[in-house]
Length: 357
Image (cartoon, rainbow, N blue to C red; front, side, top):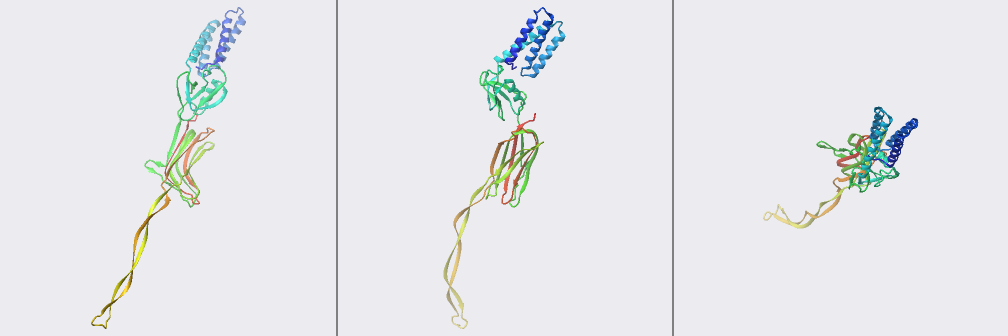
């Protein structure tokens, strides 16, 4: 229980009025003092943090009124009940939760502990509400901080850090995932550079408040000109598109070597034999004829840049500052043509957020 200074002051005044009414001889004045004491108790109960405590105590007091024979019996039972609640509140003050919490964000510089807790309970993803140490029961307006994000944690021991309240209605975040892989089949994405083209990768239904998206892909662009965008992730809700993020295709190139050949030629002289028909005694003779021969040989290895393998690229962004709900998520590749194209061997995406309250 988190009982503030207003509670104890109102209870003390109500009990004093109630005790004084027991010694007042005037019956009409006595009844008015009893009514005032009861109203003070109800006002004190209304200043507590926990609504179920308010209903429980109110029900017990009504039972006292119905079951008691005299107003003095009702007042005595009410005094005992409120004294017990006050002792429990004092014990809670001596054993309050004081811890270090991370991460924290400032909500207000001047707000009561009860309002700080109420705002946390109604906020998206708030697990801890923290006020300065020793101030949660004072009723003063102090600094209020809330935990946020997907890695909220506390550590330490009572008496350290600040007065920490835990939101019991908090639920862990949910993650919606998608991929170009569908079972054993992986959908390779390749767009044309000659025209604008859109290729759907995956779609999914959702029922959440997204706060962070991640797109991871192995991809490359056309290898020249301006950068190419890219792999898109969109979230849609009842009122239209909630977020749209894009992953740029990186430029990938590699150097390959290739052989360079040259030709070497040389000229030599060879005998060219022929026959003279009328020289019956020695018909064969020759003359010297030039002969050119060429051969191809490896001169050296050259190098050149060509399109490389797809590169791993990742983007993580915070989205949806207005905390809108989404009902569907779609991931697709889009290029505008005019030479722009991309190739993606794998695509994966995640959307993290909270269940809609």
